[in-house]
Image (cartoon, rainbow, N blue to C red; front, side):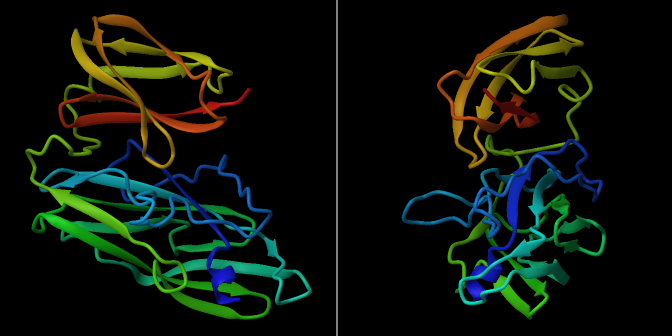
Length: 271
């Protein structure tokens, strides 16, 4: 029963542009596809399949942000209990995100980190890390409350194996995921996918304040890169074509990157 209670909720990451703000907005398009039991998404990293985990890299002295959205079901029905169980809430207990590098913290929406059954919420880890280079094993101290019982749990752990590893590299690493400080991108770019949602083809319409070369990438929600191309932008309006006909329906993250600076948004493929 504890293991089933642990996976009551669906976690899904989105990349926001409000770095260092300590705020986040839940993504209400997140759908529980498990019939009400929920999953953890992205799943903890599995060393056997090499899937899951946190797909972006933090760097020393560079602002970093990563957002999870929680979709908590209102009612579940467990095999061990022949009646539906009303979900009161799923919460991250006080100081319940452990293992973050120095200089980083977390915040929730709602602010008390208590996600009522049948609602959406989000958690953002953010800050400018100053710790030593290395891998940081993150843990969540949770309390899941239903009409029958309360279940405390620290995860990932014995009930849900795997790891959430936040990798911290040097500030000059080419792998840095940096948000919110870009003088080149944030100050000179406006872009959006049109149409969005799209049925197969879409255009990334980019208004650039200067001429510059960027890298256009598309990732799935597991963090896997499925498309990458260099794009020469000219001052004014630019268009980047994207063909998603061979992709499965769902949400994707599209980004414009220059050196260690990146701006990302979401698009939905819906045929």
